[in-house]
Length: 333
Image (cartoon, rainbow, N blue to C red; front, side, top):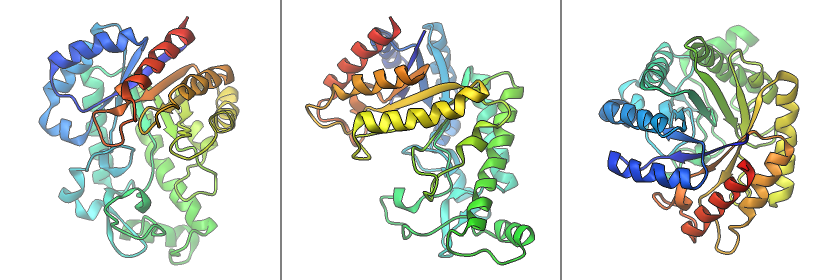
């Protein structure tokens, strides 16, 4: 059966979650992707464990998302690690220290394993690796650095690059720098995904739906070969990227299935629930249906009620949520 999910965030009250669980099940979701940020690690550990337990008790799958953790994953949160560990942060080609951890730092890896241990101990059955990436200046609405700035130029990375390639690290995206950046993230993800697998928990990953030459891209085939990965997918948000729904979904699902099928991985698909213009809500049904026809077994919406709890809500959030429920019911049946 197709598994249907929704991201969950912006609520800290258990009695609200009780109502939301009824709402989520009424909209035919079978799992929840809980956004577990560094803020919750520090200030809401007991509540997070309770939320995970309530999710499982409701008969739903419980995924944990490292929501903007260490600045290395997608999410609308700041990292508490960054100001506490400046020497472990990424450095940009401009010389600026980025608000994101460097994957090569021992402190970064220790902090990531602390998050993972908490999420697993709290009862997550799947760790969801959400859009892993090095720092992307264009994503920062505060205009912290020019869009063409690159990471990471910290002393560790500069030394490693010189040893590997016998030359100083270039400030443009040469083939050597691209390979180095890919290897930096691959080594980090391989260690962390392997750690989760060895703890007996599943790993799901979503990579950005960008061209292989894009600055923020990761090598899909190499990521898919990581030991312990179970579920692989992408999030072709056609509204956000100003793309035609059918074209974009078919294109990205073909790429996804080309990766998943030879490796026996389960295909995953995300649709955008935020920023949907009025009158275009029914495109969600088309997008989800195309994804399932193409081979997706896990599908999910970001987030519930048209993302009305955060900036970028859809024009008609309740219409979006109604379409999601109707579509999920149809696809699960």
